Amino acid sequence: MVKILIVDDEPDILEFLRYNLEKEQFVVFSAGDGITGFQIAKKEKPDLIILDIMMPKMDGVELCRLIRSDDNLKNTLITFLTAREEEYSQIAALDVGGDDYITKPIRPRVLISRIKALLRRKHTGSSEIEEETWLEFGDLRIDKEKVMIVKNGQQIDLARKELELLMLLVSKPGKVFSREEIFNKIWGNDVIVGNRTIDVHIRKLREKIGDDFIKTIKGIGYKFDF
Image (cartoon, rainbow, N blue to C red; front, side, top):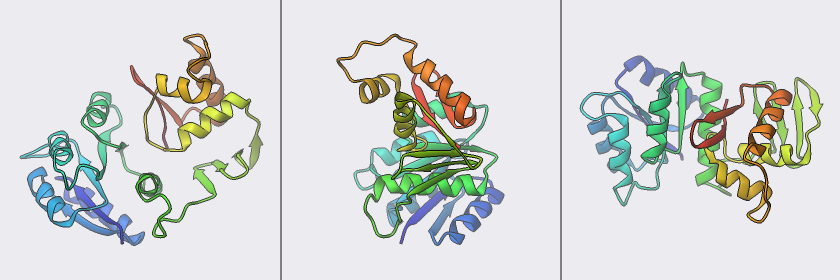
């Protein structure tokens, strides 16, 4: 039984999220402000909390900081709801300990995909969350066992480093990988490469799989998003 808490001051969004999450058999709690959200979180100890940034009484950033300071809640997964153009809010959400953010307007399939990806991080090997062989992101499919990339039904050939980079990013959808982390995992600490190496590989990946999947987080790194 996976429990999710939604904290948002807009009743329509609460209803929309509850409906789509309950369809996936999640147990859903909701609150219209940060203070009430924290009280419910302490009582129910949810597996994941969805936070709006702008709320009365206590905003999402403050609530996230409070949750991370509570010994019983500090490891709870947290994803924020942000407006697409609010880059400053997205960075603030990650800085205070958010695990991910979902941009508005919210698309149900994307919402569920992102939430399941987050939960797989926490419940690795759990029987409650089935690990999928195929990952699907719109018209892009990735077979993790065969390491095969398919776009619009056609297999895509990637160079070895391009493939390694893509598989690293999709291993945790929504996670921001710093440039240093990418260098260390793909090229290794003892390999000297140019400063533009990651940028060149990201550009080639975007040319092959499309521009919508790999997001640049200015000053930090890259993430796989959908």
